[in-house]
Amino acid sequence: MKENENWEDVLRLVEKRFEKYNWIHLYPNTCAVLTALWYGKGDFDRSMEIVLLFGYDVDCNAGEVGTILGVMNGYSGIPKKWIEPLGGELRTYLRDFRVIDLERFTDEFSKIMLV
Image (cartoon, rainbow, N blue to C red; front, side, top):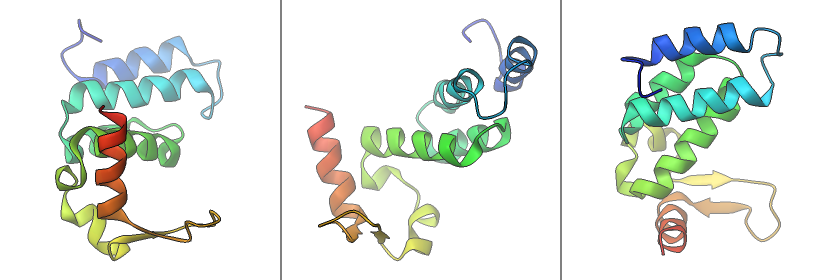
């Protein structure tokens, strides 16, 4: 990636290199996540834009990029437009974690992961 000026060049390389693989395969999707993180340079909006436009398994890849940047930058590093539609909470099927306060969870998880 270092020798490519923009993420679109990387996308073209990935499309050529992994054309025999299905869109859900690990190789192109790992490239999508890494490309978004590299060229997004820690900016949440830009990284999400790149991973979403890159294609392939978009929902999973965006989830990974968002999670990584959330851990790296904490709750305050996630623009409000990504959080407000959720009402500040995440509803899950996890036992003992049916409703998770996003701010508290993100900040606590960031502290654990960055120790």
